[in-house]
Image: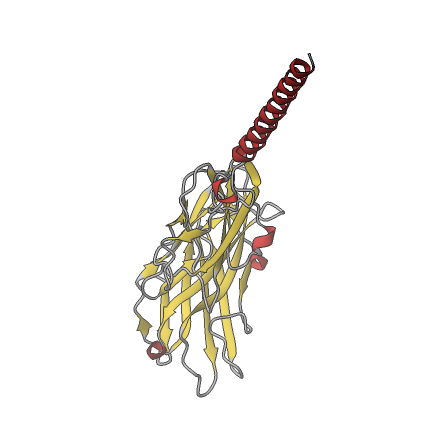
Length: 306
């Protein structure tokens, strides 16, 4: 009896030990399996690519502006293109542009678009280091707060050959409903020895009114003709459908002029039957050199008042 009891006791203890061991091994397997289910750092989706949206440190790709020249654009109608440096999906863009007389921080952005280009029309000529400022913002469509802005500047030299031009060519209303046209001379060479001009502007006097005080000829350092110590003498006449402006600089040993700049401005008041109208530089306009000879003009500009 004693031996039988001892054998039975050992058998029960052995089974119990085997059960404990089996449960311990199963628990270890579960722990190992659960550890194995956790991805390693280098197995996290997009872990090594900051441009992958699944990366916790996701950042928008930089942009590459493709066609901004190092020299001025030679047209007043242009297209600016860009592309992401890193290939990404779900990107959208918006832009803003400021002319030389504007502060780009005051300009609102365009609506969002997915196209990687913008077409711009009727840009004004830039003078003496003036530039356009251009911003393009790229953002992630599911989360527009993830964005970057890229800025560039460019110049415009659309007038090819000496002449008069309106700046801008598309003239918008002033706060009081009037319209002001700014007239410039451009592409002057030092050898031209420019000293005076006679400018004739065509307009529709049935739609627009011009009074004597509406014609302002620059007689100070705001004029392209200005030289220190010299005097600018000017005259103007308003007739039906035409305004004539003449100005010249008087002085000794005048240094030559080069490039271009403003010469005058005219304010038009719309009449009751006005909707939109055009104004133009007449082909009878002339530039003259120091000896009184005509300087060849190859550009006679037009503008739209609307």
